[in-house]
Structures are given as C-alpha cells and as structure tokens.
Amino acid sequence: MEEDEKEAGTLVIDTNVLISAMIRSEGITRLSLLFLANNPSNRLVCPEIAAKEVERHYAEIARRAGVPSKLVRAGLDELLAKMRLVDESEFSAEVANSKALVNDENDTSFAALAVKNRPSVIVTYDKKGYKEDELRENGVLVFTPTEALKHTGIELSKIDIRRKRKGGAMAVIARILALIGVKEKD
Image (cartoon, rainbow, N blue to C red):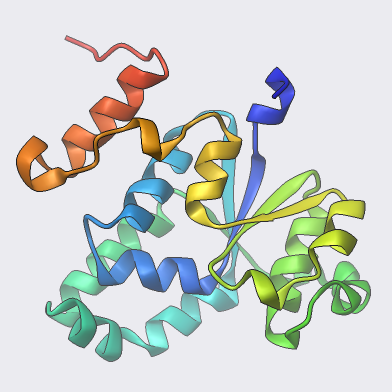
C-alpha cells in the first residue's frame, strides 16, 4: 500500500455506524470512530439529518445499550463533537446525480456528501446500500469502520482488544497508538 493510500481524508459517517457506536460504549465501532477522529489525516463528516435520525431513536438505543437516555445523548455528543455536521444545502447540487450511486435511496445524502468531498470514504455497515464500483469511479470508497481503520494503516487483528483483561477502551487506544509509533505524552 502506498503512503498516500493510508490517508482516508474525508470520512462520511453513516447513521448505522453512529447507532452502533451508541449501543456499545466500549465496542469496536466506538473505538474505531474515536481513533479515526483523532487521526489528523482524517476529517469526519456526517449529514445533519443523520444526527437527527439518531436522536429519534434514543429510546431504542438506550434500551439496547441498557443505559439511561441521557447517557446515550452524552455519548452521541462526544462523537458528534469530533465530526462536522453538514447541512444538506452544502451538498444539494450532488444529490440528483448521487441517486445513481446507491441501491437504497435513503443513502443518497451520504453518497452526495462523499462525492462533494472526494476523494472520500463512506463508513457504513450497510455496504449493500451503495454501488461501490460506481462510487469508486467517482473518487469514493465504501468501508466498514474496521476496513476504514485498515485503510489508514491500522489492522485490528494486530492489536489485542480484549478490554476486560487489558485495561479498558483507553488501553486499547494506547496499544493502537503504540502500534503505529505514536508515543504517549508524559
């Protein structure tokens, strides 16, 4: 892999990834997003409508996570603080053409935002909703959160992510940083 391929650049975060990150606060999705957000080579963006969709599902997310709704809100706020929410007016010119790049019309906003910010990566668990070949021709890749990490040079298979025995989420992040050669501050 060439050095420039390791920089994901703009990462467009799909709603399903945000919801997954909310359900397990120390899950691999949340860890992946936090690591991607803290990599200075990356810029995380999300259509503003996606954040609103997550807000509509607070009760279900809280139920699945087994935590109060206000903790879900705090977790979402933490994630959203690390990304730029983009109003649809900023990528509306790309919406019409982006309909041909998706299999699910609900994913059009994500494709349009990615095309507007190309080269870019759509981070999703619903890859079947996108026409990957057509998107690739338009400078957009489609990855799961773990694939996005791998694209930026991090392979989770090389990291011991057993949090319970190894010190929790922050310890996992420390092991990731050590793997890529980033030294911790004293």
